[in-house]
Length: 458
Image (spheres, rainbow, N blue to C red):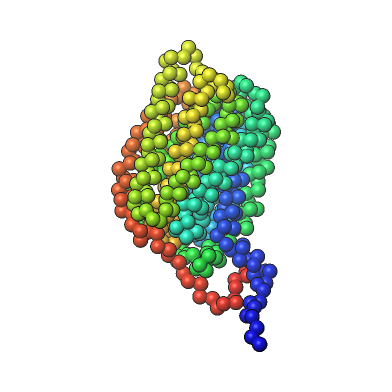
């Protein structure tokens, strides 16, 4: 009598390793670090000036942070290729709790040197973090899933400020004046930031990651450190990257002015509300953009053009809106207004913050997706992402430096944001117009291991 062919059960260790090496697990690890490190950093800065009463010292510290970030990040992609993305991610998480400690000491026992030290260390480590994180999120999944996993990552990053904002809102809800947030707010954030390093060490090396189709991710490291840096320089001076530099530069430029806007015109609890609620704007826009960019039935060029046009429309609209409001605050109000939550004038002023986050996060996700279409392997992606984040940080260096002066004219910041946004449209459109479906073909190496010989090494 014939018997049914019953496959032997898969060993528990093999099942655990299979989950550990899976794409969802890698994205979960990267998202977890994003939640604890830059997510909490964003939560602090969404308070306006890192929760401080005055924005100027914190703006100067953030200018230092982004200056070092910009210089190191371009090279960090090459360094991460040599040391591995796991260690690049772990190294990148070290500076964030030191930055939080600097904000804490500056607010309650003014020590500007420690604030600047924490900012400098955070800038150096964050360069490695972002070059590694972006390469993981774009390079580990299949091309057709990139938009979705980018949205998951952006959601995790936004969840940090949402959770942090909820904590902050609970601790500061009764503070209806301007000023600093409570000490407990900083302590909670610093503790969460410390979790980034141990979480990062659970990431699998790219060579061992298992996609659903059992193919491996291509890793093409250069033969030497010098060759890695030469590859980065060659990419940096390429026509495609040079045309995209204005978009890289302006993509997060708004963040410095947003911080000053919150500190100048909103009470502590209004800023706490903003640090909680504004991040939902980024989540909404991330999934909206992802649903379009991953839609394979629409030509890739059409998807890119529609997405970019919508983003530019939102961003230019916010700067026109900001100009109108700023004119009113300067010339039509008897004194500089301070809005408490849900009081007169709060809605029209806060909605601007919401749509800055909505358009800004969508722009970020679009740029990551765009450079991902032109990178052929994880090492190339690491170079691309290092350059993207480096020039984005250069933009933030200028933006935060502009906010470090107490008498800065807000119209200058608004004009620069609007002008450079317009300036980036034509060169970015040229690169978009060169996209073809061939850019979404997976470049992978077939796993040629014999069946039954799974990789169970850590």
